[in-house]
Image (cartoon, rainbow over all chains, first blue to last red):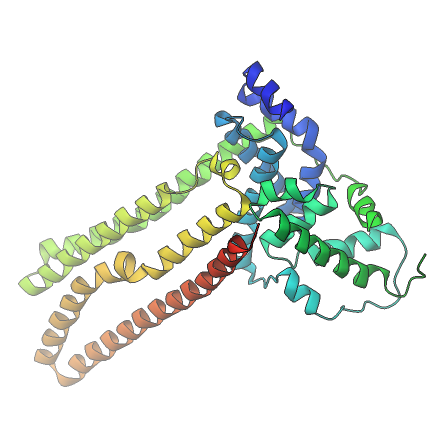
Length: 182
Length: 192
């Protein structure tokens, strides 16, 4: 909360807050857009949409939560709205973590060891998920703890922990099967 | 599983920066999009109102005048509802003040209510006017010939079926959204 207090004390304006948020979380926002939109042009548009939403939201920043929580909530909520619109347009079928866990691995042949391929498969997996589960897996991959994820998403910390356990199982099954342990 | 986090966090950033200038341009485009969407919707509404209004004023048959007048009233009511619903969109700070769960639920609720109430605010208000027009056209058709009257009846039945079909499609979509809302409620009720 120190960060929030210092922002409140400085009485930072809309533009300053926006610049601060982008300096601190610009790269994660780019990765977040990538997890929500696979088409490159639409992704650029989504990223601009997220930044616009962030900039507009800072006109009434009230320092009741940290800059990080504020930024991630705006980004996830703007991106989830984008997914809902796209789902109607492209007739996408999204699944929950529980459903994904029960689905068979698509089995893409021999597993390439390069990170690029792993990243593509990881993105494909994330893009199948419903918004809330997508938000949890992204927070996990960004290295957030369960409490921070709970604050952003509104899901209880216990439930986040259960979902993270499930995410780890899915990732282990899909990305490490057949590899030597140790 | 830390290797997956590494893969994720170390991915090459693809032109992830957005300048403040770009954000301002996007804000301008956003306002322009909203403006032109409103122009489009209100123009269609205006044209239809003018069309039915003209018949309400100029038609030599009193029943037709009543039917067209009622349709104009229905169009104006639907237009007012459209305007009200568009203005109820989320404020910029809502995106941050609401958790993802609450924001997502509010969006689904808004869509569900719009679909569920489609008879009340969009399809329904047009029914009295269109029904009166159909009856008047049917009477005039039968006065001319059986085949003309029958054509009007068939046209009216097809229109009614289209109306009912549209209503059912919307109700089905509203039910699916309700299922998603209930799933979110179940997540919220889970122990802390």
